[in-house]
Amino acid sequence: MTMALSIATLYTEELKATMRGRFAWLGAAVILLAVGGLATVGTQDTWLDGYGIIAYGLVPLGFIPLAAGMIASPRANRFVECVFTAPVNRRDWLTAKFLVLATLGAAYYVALVPMMVVYNWHVGIPPLLQKFLIWTPGLLIASIAVGTLIGVLFIGRSLAAPAGTGMGVLLAYAGLIPLQELMVAQGNGATRTGHLTLASPAVLLKNALGFTLAASSIPATTKLTWISLLVLVIGALVLAGWVFLCAQGVETWEATGRQRWTITLAIAAMTLLPVMFADTNYDNPAPHANSAPAIRALFSRAGTSVALVPPGGKPPVRCCSTILNRDEWPMGTDERTVRDLLLLLPVETTRRVTNLHAKVAGEVGLEVTADTDALVQAAPLLEMRTYPNDSGPAAADGHHVVTGWIARIPMTLNPTKPWDIGGDRYPLTVSATYQVEGDSQPRTFSARAAVDAEVASAIYEMGAASMILPLLCIAASIVRWRRTR
Image 1 (tube, rainbow, N blue to C red):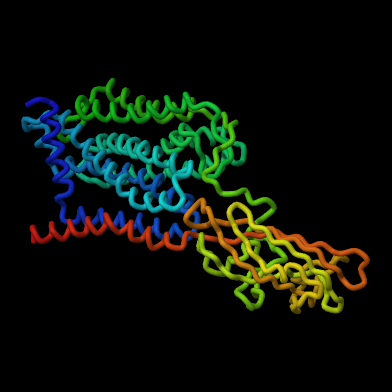
Image 2: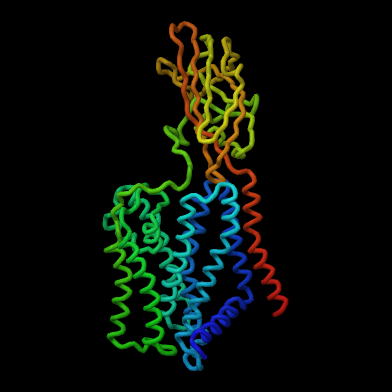
């Protein structure tokens, strides 16, 4: 039997055996439901920041303990005795086992496609998602390589040691991602701690591809980063194969003293090489994740002197957030929403206001239509509001208004050209001039705020798309159960 035919036969049988377990298909359905549920919930905020980082970055690292357990399991259930004694080439069996793990990784990658299609339908493929689509298969390969090495190194009768080690490595690799982002954001990416974060293949591949998750800079060069990443991945695979074929017997180690030192030094080299030599010259600005606008002078927890309420509604009790509809459901993109804009004028009600001229302008796709008669009023119809605990706007002399005037402007808002399916915050600029009784010059009013919007149908479309593969897995598990009961 040729080597290719032998590997193909072993691969087919190992893949069947992997999915032959009573709860294999059900377990796959649970994992896909969790990822799909996260994708659905992620539509309520910035999808890439929430769902994208977990599904495209953290879950692939979960293949480390999975690979470790699958490679070590033949030792625990004594199936390895067949591999070492039957007329089966051990090299072919290990290759087939790796191909099975690669198939599972490819299946997970394919499982992300339905949700990505929904996202692409509404907003296209932004630069960060393009990077994610390369980052994920790279992480899957690196995770399988590291997990395979861990699974080979533990030859006991228990899966606790390889699975526990794989989980520990997973937590370390995952934890180094936000630590590296924090160090780079603080300008400390080249410090000792910054170098230490490069031990994670997720960080290495992220730097090599030239993107960040939160930091504002990326390495100016990536040659040494790519070399370090290749040494880690290829080295793990080569070392795993060599240990399995040349340094182990059926149930025990058969390595010589020189081989043991070789294994130890090889693992140390794969760990320390990226830490010592990968690029840390974070001098280039990070690319934009998407086409989201840079909202100038606007902070979501700061206050503003404008409010957005339903037609005829009262100002919110907690007034006023710069995200005008923070306490409401986000507006639907490409949908016209009627609201009243309230201008909290810093004028006490003891003084008369005349000649109000207001202007409201939306930015980056926010279309604003206001009643002309409401924007220009010689004798404006104002409302009174009492502010408790010095919460009113500051008057010209610096004191906080206790009972002030409010101008109401009916308007229609239509957020267009979304850059994400959720968490789209469109800037809004409000300016006005008005005359106050007793003043010789008109006063000016200026405020900046934003409205929160989302693709209204995305939550339902994402939920439907994320259910396709889990339902198929559940159906397969039912068929399997009916055949084996």
